[in-house]
Image 1 (cartoon, rainbow, N blue to C red):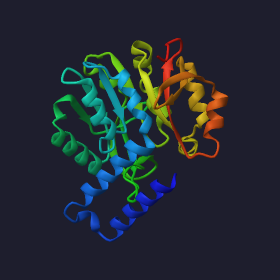
Image 2: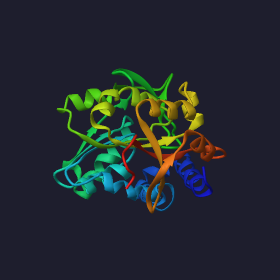
Image 3: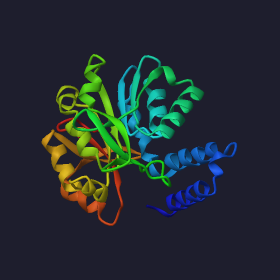
Image 4: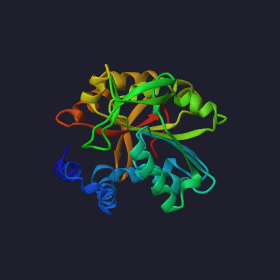
Length: 259
C-alpha cells in the first residue's frame, strides 16, 4: 500500500468513526477522490485495456466495487456492447448503480449481486468497515449468493467474452475455477490483481495462481501505459511481487500477440 492510498483510507476511517459519510456530499467526495486515485495512480495503466473492449464486445467485471472499471468498460463497448458487473456488497451495489444511472450507462450494464466462486450457492462475505474495496469471502460475515461465471454466462446464452477483470481479495483462483468452460471457449483477455497474502488466506498463493493460469493456457504480459509487451515468466512475476503488497497483471492466451 502506497502513501497516498494509506492517507485516503485513513481519512475514510476517520469519516466512518465520526459518522461523517452520512453528511450531504461526503460520500460523493470520497468516491471522487477514489476514482481520481484509481485513474492517476493505482490503475493508470488500465486505459490500455480499451483495445480489448471494442464496440459491441461483452466484458465481465468481477469485484466491480463502486464501478470505476465498470463505467469505463461500458463507455468503451458502446451502446451495442454489454458489461456484466459482479458485486456482492450492498453499499457498493447501491453506489455502483447510482453511478451508472448518473452517467447514462445503466442500459449497457447488468449488475449481478453476488460473489463469483468455483461453485454456486451461498458464502459468507467478511466486511471491512474501513475499506470498501476490501470485503472478501470468509468464514463469517453476511451471507451472499455465490455464482460461477460459467453459470452466469450460460444463463445469458454464452455471449463471446472479450475481457474479464478480476479483483476479489484473494479469491481470484476460485473465480477462475468457476469459469473453466468460458476460458476454453472464448479465450478472453484476463486482468487480475495478484496479492500473495490475500491468496494465501484463501489456501493458495501467487505462485499457485500463476501456475493455474499457465495450466489454463495463459501467459502474463508486460503492462504499461505504452501498451502490452513481452511475455513475463513466472519467476519474473514473483520477483516483481517481492516487497509489494499486490500488482495488477494482464494475461493473454498463449500464442496471442500482445499488439
